[in-house]
Length: 264
Image (cartoon, rainbow, N blue to C red; front, side):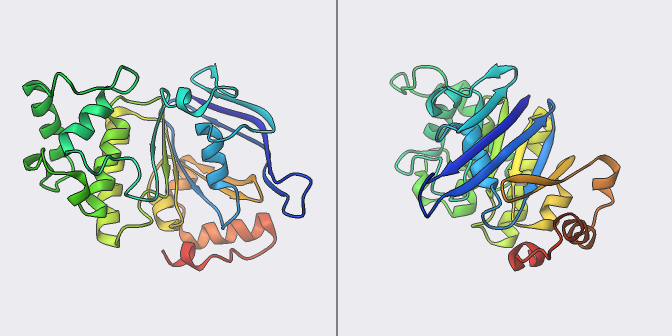
């Protein structure tokens, strides 16, 4: 479902601020894979995700989604393949519009997006059922402005919007990092439910090692723009934070110096 072939990305080339962000980077995801991604600051996690989304061009290599070469496609054209949830709960929703209007716009992704004809009774019932999954009482607040919702409610809504059209690939960029622990756990629980229900191919960046181990069928760790650990199957099921830290030290020859990741 996703192939990243020998991708290189260099920021500020030829200057004192030159940074090799992705170093001949390759990754393949099978249909239905749920891959968690960890790594220290500057490891290349967000650069990888932005490369997939087409935020900027890569310097070398290819990116294919479901067999289609999207390497030269601009960001807005790649959006037809992707669902994405960002770290900031304020990103991904229209604050001045109602909950049902936001969902209606998400449902019309890839089509001409206007609400002139209004939202049908059938759509409204569909949105109510979808919102019940969240367990946040939003199904009774369809006309409430999204700007009035809490960060956790907005992030949960964004997740629903990103998956409404069943994307080829779901990108979760530390989508629970800005939430309190209880709300983060609820959003992760909902994420797991939707991903498993729709068999969505998913990449989830997280700073939290326990979350990376608990969710998905595969875990990769990045360092200096490369994958240094790729753990899946039975090995991942038995994995502990201590095992992961030991493996990192074994592969990299240094300690994992990111307290947030260790203590999360």
